[in-house]
Length: 146
Image (cartoon, rainbow, N blue to C red; front, side, top):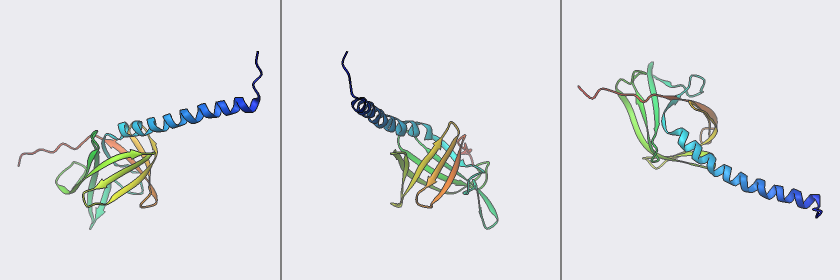
């Protein structure tokens, strides 16, 4: 039986941990991407409420993340997805735990993903320096008939 000094054993464990850690980080971005797919609105516990108030009028914002890296924001007149007040599209990706969204006008936003569960998302807006909460919702289906 061969004796291995404790320091040598410790360095072998460290190398194994670093290797696993790098693999886990890459998997984490893939997991985040998978869980982001769908429609999200701000939760009632968010500093950015889902019902946006402008001139005493209530609005309802939905953010949609598609599997192909495209997405969009739609601001509806109400939570029943009445008329669309404003809409925009973006592309998105996740890198090193950050959600990066690139908008049509050339701007982009960075959000650190703090936690993402089945229906809830907790993120920290790097650009606006505050925490935000999102809730997964069913997409709005509006009638196309006039």
